[in-house]
Image: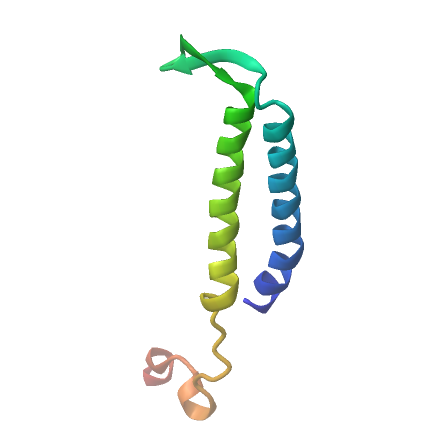
Length: 94
């Protein structure tokens, strides 16, 4: 868990960079038309900026979840069984 916590630092930085890149695309292409799709068929036109904004929303949700895991769900137990009780009880009975 300690390694996972450290690994989240560069991962969160990369996710932030991806969100910024997608936000830049959304801003630059807010009026760039493209074919919309519904069930793999052509639908009403949309803008590429809208598509990229959807990516930003998904990336932000993933980043929030990763922060939640980092801040509260990576538990480490430093204690445990020791001494004569540390071994497998079934093995001692034989």
